[in-house]
Amino acid sequence: MPSRSDSPFSLSGPARGGWRSRRPGRATWAALVAGIVASTGMATPPAVAAATSGGPGSTGQVPGTILVADPGVVDGGDAVGPGFVTLYQPGASGHASPEVVVTKGMAGPGGIAFDSSGDLWVANESGHVVEYGRAELAKASPVPTVTLSYGGGGLAFDPSGNLWVINGSVVVEFTKAEIAKSGSPKPVRSLPDSCSVAFDPDGDLWEGSTSDTVAEFTKAQLAKSGSVSPAVVITSADLNGPCKPAFDRLGDLWAGNYNTDTVVEFTKAQLAKTTTLAPKVVISSPQNETPGDVAFDASGDLWVPTMGLHTVVEYTRAQLGKSGVPVPHVTISTNADTENGPWAVAIEP
Image (cartoon, rainbow, N blue to C red):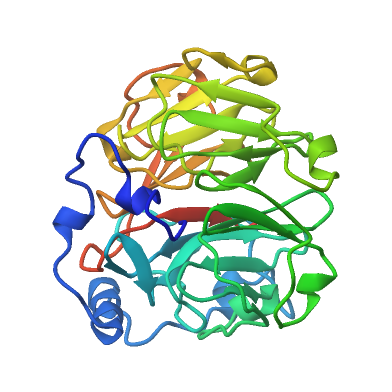
């Protein structure tokens, strides 16, 4: 969730009722937590070692744990926090109680991603980038294991384990060594930014946008210093605020359109060169209202967070095979009394 005037929280173009018109007012963090507790029936976030471990003596999560980022209070179109990240166990649906509500280290979380070790990283728009180790996420009240003094509105890892973070008008890269401990790392490389980023199976970086494009920077381009222009730019009338794309196992690009409540697919072949074209698949379900950063799970199902409806929905691989208005296979209803709604989702590998 970039912190700037062209963020998806202040998108230009046709006016949206959007989440801002649904805001119940400037809630305090205590009120947000109270709302979560009231809606889930929890006295406090529960200890989850048994529910989320792989068995006796395990310190990790069960693969498939669903993590959802809510940016919290918004001021002037930008998330200022504190916000939170909620964890749902595999199989959760409906008004399921989250296993954990992560509040420590939150400052407007606008992007979440896992590294190759299964540790969770969160980009805080009004604060910093934080890491939570796998073992830490199995606790009732996780605290960051690494804090980088660098605010970000989105993030992604490349195949080498280097971290790319959205900040202002650029995408910056931090090496794997630089993010191994807390501190103030210096970026080693930067690119012009449009909204958020993701990597395809070949290691190429793709930028989403707040308009009608997605753009690719190749792995070879990323290895060079200095300014570079996108190798490929895809423009489509069916793209309207595709902030952060995601890639399936075939290398096809999927994106949620914040402004038009749709999720679209472009095949790997379609992405081969700069062009203007229509997507292969358009999912137009009303359950997609104001979709944010989408993500795939290990089975190839697509998860879509919807700020407008305060839900996270799952579409199966079979449902994604053609355009239409499918009913989501799973719907998780997050707390509708929070300031905004879910912006980003990540599935524990």
